[in-house]
Amino acid sequence: NAGVTQTPKFRVLKTGQSMTLLCAQDMNHEYMYWYRQDPGMGLRLIHYSVGEGTTAKGEVPDGYNVSRLKKQNFLLGLESAAPSQTSVYFCASSLWTSVQETQYFGPGTRLLVL
Amino acid sequence: SQQGEEDPQALSIQEGENATMNCSYKTSINNLQWYRQNSGRGLVHLILIRSNEREKHSGRLRVTLDTSKKSSSLLITASRAADTASYFCATDAIQGAQKLVFGQGTRLTINP
Picture 1 (cartoon, chains in turn orange, green):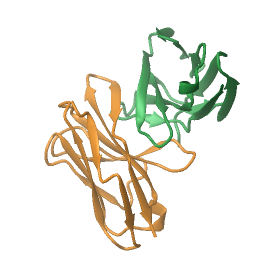
Picture 2 (cartoon, chains in turn purple, cyan):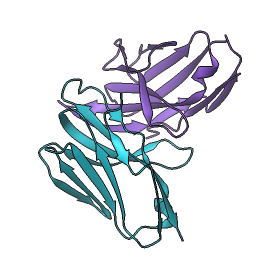
Picture 3 (tube, chains in turn orange, cyan):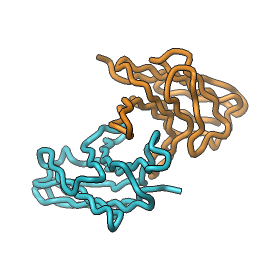
Picture 4 (cartoon, chains in turn purple, blue):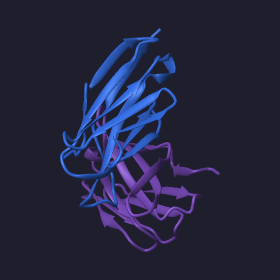
């Protein structure tokens, strides 16, 4: 089991460029999440998905879009990157019972927007 | 706004000592989780305690939960250099249980 993987690991963008971050999980989890982490801070939820074909906004969704076309993949898109989006992005997945269970995290993608 | 708030923000102790970190939250929860993050890495789940539990152990970890005070503590006994990391608490509010809200973390440094 690879668990949760993220590509790319590191990316540099110029302001206004677009990119897509890919998250993949092989644990058959229903729930997937995208977070951002800024220096010295905890994680802030960008978007999440409770199943294939569904997405929902988190705490800081502006400037990002997501898609969950396949259960195992969750894509995060930046349409027009801004320096404020410089951050480390983490993807996570979890099972769902009737409450939130353990989340399994990927290794992160470091994004620098110049 | 953050649901969980950790205290202290940073903690530095000698190897072999015990480390205690605290977490406070604002709304009623289903469960509370603790995660560890080594520098530059993703978060790793440590322990989950449900709202009807008061204490839970896992190896050198001991977690307590006081729902009346809306607080939790994580105790790491007999600390090791490898315990150096940031520790985060995360809660799922009963209203909105499909997601976790993370605190800002406690940065723990174990000095050899």
